[in-house]
Length: 113
Image 1 (cartoon, helix red, strand yellow):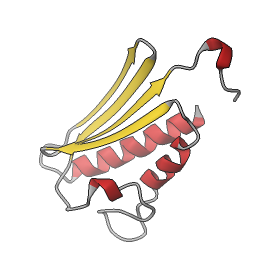
Image 2 (tube, rainbow, N blue to C red; image 1 turned 90 degrees about the horizontal axis):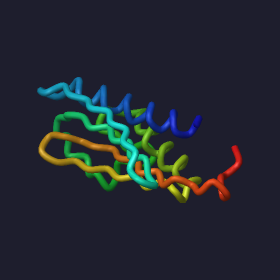
Image 3 (cartoon, rainbow, N blue to C red; image 1 turned 180 degrees about the vertical axis):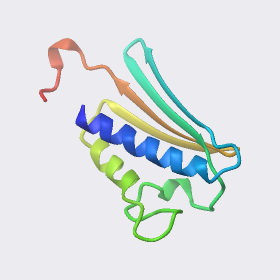
């Protein structure tokens, strides 16, 4: 639970800050249960900064200035612990999305907390 709330908190913090600097100022949060999965999506508007999407999870990588860029790096480190979680980042047409797809763990193989 801690890792999930920390991850969502980082995504929401980044989404709110990025959208505040954009023209549309839009943030959407969605949780959806599908068969054997739970999908969490956070979508926000943003202003183009030239930051490459493939680098945003690197330590210290930020479009917001110096001494920043630890949040998404921390998410990357957290998610390494969970083989049942898929993380996707998509940026298109002024919108940015972070998606977590969490595959449900079968009852007899639950991980211990």
